[in-house]
Length: 402
Ligand code: C5P
Image 1 (spheres, helix red, strand yellow):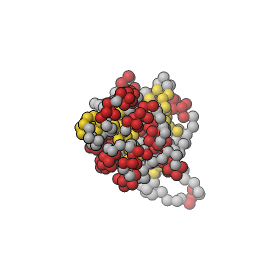
Image 2 (spheres, protein in one colour):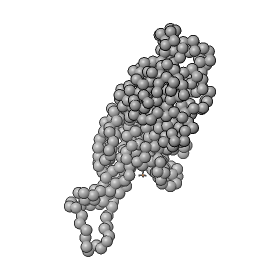
Image 3 (cartoon, helix red, strand yellow):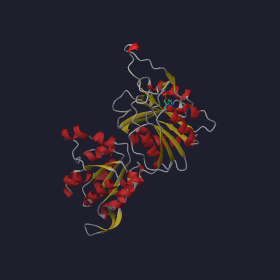
Image 4 (cartoon, helix red, strand yellow):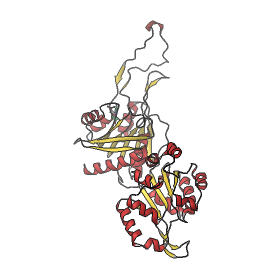
């Protein structure tokens, strides 16, 4: 179940007897490579101890909304942004009612209200409580708002009744959580994605590069593969694992990157997330440059322009749907719009790299996407994985309209 690999799951544990299965669920999710942070309600703590879930998840359990120490460590907004999926298991009738009404009177319900990541519930309750019209009305409301429901199953219950209301087993819940990450939006499409920095050699030991970590491009490749696309990822030198089902091609310089992209054509959609060096030294010295006493304290390096990979591919007769990135430190929207026009793109993703909490090398990002009609769509601060999935869904939509 590679889809759970490196996914960040906030597991909410409500106050029901099925909470004993949550311990097994944490193990299953982690076995499949997910990172799990547990949030427990007051009721949840009556059925299973935070210590058990701390030991299994490898992280302190989050308990209180109004505890300053806990909020300083990883507060409700950070948890809400961190998550790729909020899974509540068990979800009691009371939790379902509070969530349906948008009540935020404890940490778990507040995280749900604060997150814009998918939320899934695994209901667990007595069969009469499940069948009650109030619970059924809450169920309808939650489904209408896009909250997913895993189960409940039917069978014998802890209270002795038989009927609907049993929480699904840990394996079934882990499978359902994995399925949340498969969308099929790009099935049958070939996506070419560039990522990372390029390195431009000065001599055999020195080079010019930039701060790009490649995280955004890799997250996009992972999200595109989850959406069913065939993905070719052409990347400069980075220290990142290759996402599952992605064909990775490692390159060093801008010219290598262009050659690798041309060899990977044709594609349906090109997403150029690489931070390509605009210039390279005109001559690469064959030997290590020595300090030259005749030139004083200076060194003059003659630089020449690199090819623009995105503009080159966007001008081909078999031109794909083209998505560029504009990493700027000032006049973000103005520069991004100009780039969209100059490079003949369909969409441009603008991000402010002057802000240290987003952009280059950080875990989070926040971007705006601008189209040819200069309409701007904002994606607020969230993990790069979360932004990548939202971007892939948006790109798939626009591609289909094109
Ligand atoms: O012009 P600028 O470098 O700001 O443009 C950024 C966009 O163009 C990004 O999508 C980047 O990947 C792409 N680009 C490229 N080849 C270059 C320079 C930029 O593909 N030589």
